Length: 439
Image (cartoon, rainbow, N blue to C red; front, side):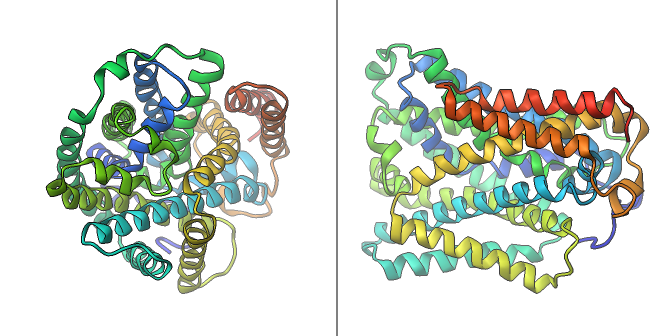
């Protein structure tokens, strides 16, 4: 793996500019699945104004990613290597496993979406979907993603920049063609839904599916930034790079939901969207969809392998790649061939993932703001398994936040489980570590 056994990058290796982060996160958020997000938002029974507000506030959760990226700039270390400072060398395995499972889960979701897109492309050429074609499409798309594991960081930045310009333009063209399909009378006549049981659950769903999910990869790409790069430039590049495509695509999904109300429940939402477009536009749309999905899979695979490297398990590079290849093939295979309920599994996955990540990033950011930002990261905290094996304060703060968040979900009809988790974990860590100056 890249820089295996090395905690910090040298200053001469840290040559990145903030604009690199803009292109990385822009390309990673061009996925056509954002249109489905918009349809799902409408499904919560919200008005157009409420839905657009979610399309704004949800992607702004990338501010968390931007702020967490500062730790990578300061040190040149990957995210879950830095996380050892707050949880301990071995204690970090718990949230790191959740982070790894989240990345692999997202890879599986995106590979499933890519497979559905290929199936829609075949359908556009008159080839009907069957199990053999599903398997073939899955192998093709998953194989493309696995091949990206051999990309260097500079190659990845170059590819993300290319995809941003080319497929960003194609996606914008598709969106322009979709907007006229909007039933504006139906859209503006929708009454406002309940804020507590409609707006906030929908907002939480989008936050998990956008910024919160990517917090566990924040430093993986900012570690190449020069130490002299301004914090505001890094936070702004990350946030804007993700916000622009997400807002546009999610908003399009909101508009499109009036023309295709069944979109939020479709077995293949990608195919359904293609059927709304003029026939001559279908092929362009499907290529744009594939182009938008591919870069997010590239950085998702890279980050999941980086997280795996922090488990301190001796594993060959080929073995790590094989493990990921098997997982991101078998899960989509089950979802697409046997369960045939892609969106249901997707929503359940996001709900479970959100609580674990909310607890982790809360502690990570509190640790950075109040301890590491000024005093830095002691190398022994990050690479010596015996110096700080388990930080009891960090681990118990994470566990307490997760348990309370889950209980809040089970016993209350509310959507504040992630906010409660975030507050509890961060607050407990502040008391157990910051106030006691434990580092």
